[in-house]
Length: 209
Image (cartoon, rainbow, N blue to C red; front, side, top):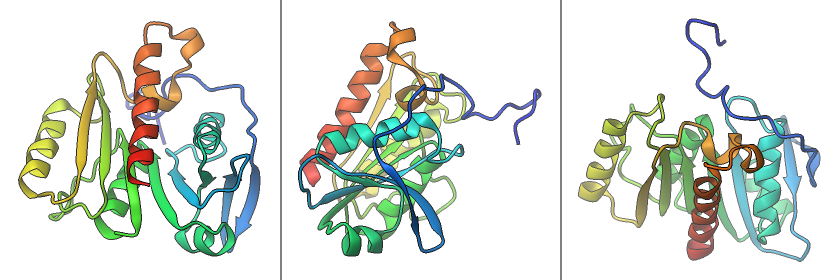
């Protein structure tokens, strides 16, 4: 739990006033948020939220944005996507804690066609550079949670050991949470970076799915 001496690193940015276009569902023991595109799709993205969960309006906004680009969107499990949504191509996008989880998925599940880890990085596994999935890593230059020297090590080790496609991109002047926790309308100087990062995310998914 965050406190004044050591605030939660994810408790930054802006909370959106947003309800969402999808619906809440129960998948076995998991509650999830599902949103589908307007036309039929055989592609799906698992969105893994930060510690505030899928109930956070910002996370629902990102899910709806991906669905508008033609992906079935669900914070759930691969089996549900395949059996209930008819997904044949599955990707993963994660923010903060969810970015770490996306990195884990990219290491263990080759059936994940594309991964986007947004300010998240696995630190303790020996095989953390042996990606099985093409993965885009997005970081902010002024992220107090993930220092640039850690990002530099990641990039160098991936270049040395990784056998699938990857990209590490650092956004100048940006902090932890900028992609999904900052509102463009009240952060005009950050808007170009927010939009560029979101476009990069969509382009990466489109390329590999």
